Image (cartoon, rainbow, N blue to C red; front, side, top):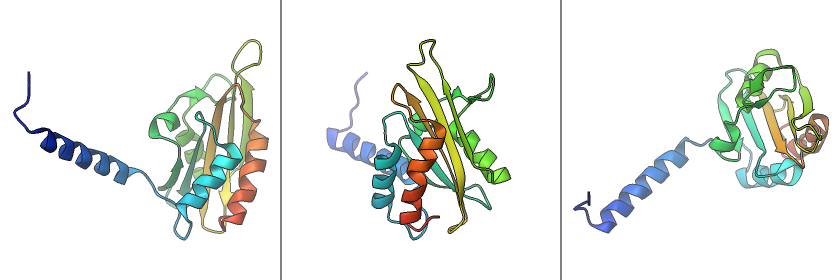
Length: 158
């Protein structure tokens, strides 16, 4: 079935949809330049299969996401038994108890593929973060935290 709408109307509708969806994506914590935060996360743990979320400690409201919603929504081994997590689950646990975590595990028989998780509190702004990396070039969870936390400090988040 073909549409009677002119191509310009279809293009305009697509622009509205894209702008509406991008407006739903969190920007950056108040007082932090998003481009600088994106660059810092990219330099520290950036990878097509990594995700980092930052939320308010008091409310759990998401204020920043590094990478796409699709990458961040993947179910991956929690490295704590049989459970699978999304990075939002680690973020929620960190919001709830304020405990930093650094977890890693191999997900292939030959140890060539792994998953790592890191989370912590960013007290300078009342925030928490959670991150996940997955793949063949994954850093251990403790190394992820060691690489990203100084970047947070440089940006005034810690």
